[in-house]
Amino acid sequence: QLHLEESGGGLAQPGGSLTLSCALSGVTLDNWAIGWFRQAPGKEREGVSCSPRDGEQPMWADAVKGRFSMSRDNAKNTLYLQMNDLKAEDTGVYYCAGRRSCLSLTELGYPSSNWGQGTQVTVSS
Image (cartoon, rainbow, N blue to C red):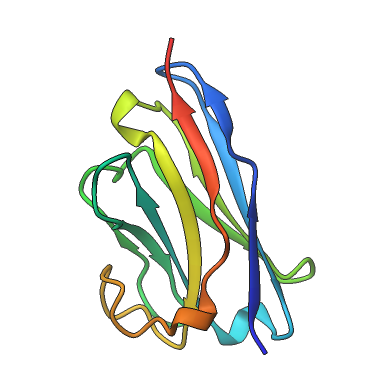
């Protein structure tokens, strides 16, 4: 059974960087597409990116394109979200979730059991 756990959140200054980790257990990372989502205070959760299985294209929200990147370490069964040039509007709880293919940046298609518990990212001076 898929289990995901995020880590790496914290406080960063505007223009700074953070790297989030999404560690999978119970399954093999290379068989899964992993989406990143975030929820800012008082707002709905939104899609940030999706890391596909081999042969598919990654997906990015316009708000983070060019600033965020993703990488996979299959040996550690972990996906990373590298966040650079952070802005105040990047503040929120970041979640990773698993499904078989990216298809979109919406939450549709991600079973409720396929989500991590979230990690807080705060961008503030």
